[in-house]
Image (cartoon, rainbow, N blue to C red; front, side):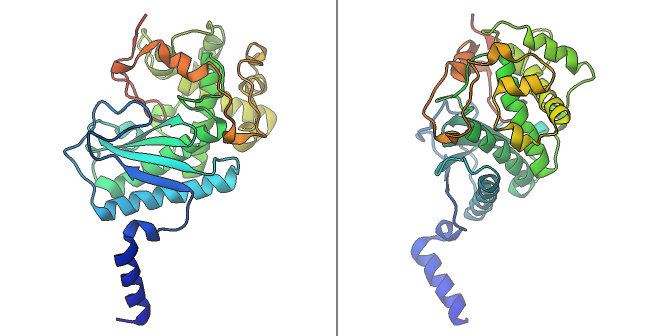
Length: 306
C-alpha cells in the first residue's frame, strides 16, 4: 500500500465515507425509520422494509450534490444551505424515472425513490438528477409548500411548474412523456386563465373530474415554451420574471396576477415573504389521496374535500 492510499484509508476510518464527498452546500439525510421527523407530511407509502447500502447512499449523495453545484452555478440565488431528505417508497414511479420530489419549505426538499423501479439505484440516478433540477428550481423561485412566496391561482402554479419542468428538460436532456402537452393545449391555457382564483388545485394540477391529468403542469410547460419563443429569452431569464410577466410574454393576459403573483428576483430564495399561494391551494385538497411528487405523476385519487 502506498503512503497516499494508507492516508486515505486512515482518513476514511476516522471521519466515515460520507464526509469525504466533494464540498457542497447540501446536506443529504436518509429517512429509514418510522420515527423520522419529516419537514412536511411523511409519504403514505414508506418502504421501511427496504434499505440502502452505504455504497448506494454515496452514489445518491454524490448525484444530489453534483446537481446542486450546477444549479448554484446557473442560479446563484439558491439558498446557502439546502437539506434533502431521501426516502424509499412503495410506489410505481416509472413515468417519472422512478424518482419523485417535493419542495417542502425554503431550503428543504423531499426526494422519494421507488423500490419497484427495475435496476435499483444505478437505474434511478437519471430520474434523481431530473427531480433535483426541478425541485431546486422551485427553491430559487420560492415555490414551496410552506413559506411560499406566490399568491393563489392555477395560472401561477402552472407557470412555476412549467419553469421547473423546462429547466429540468434542458439540463438533463430528458423530456418525460408524461409532461408532453396535447395539440389542444392552447385551449387548456385559455381555460385555466378563466378559472376563479380559488379553483381546486387537485382538479387542475393533478386529476380533473373529466379524466384529464396534470392540466396545469402540462399547460405550464406550454406557456413557458410560448414565452421563450415570443421573447427570445431563455428559461433562466424567464425565471427572473413574475408569473404575470411570463403569462404576458406567452400571449396571455397576466394583469390579473400582477400583485398576487409578484416576485422579487433580487432577494432570491432568502426572502421570508409568504403569500397565500401554494399552501392555500393545497388546503382545498384531501391530502390522504395525493402522493406529491415532482413533475405531475402524483395522483392516486385526488379528492376535493369541499
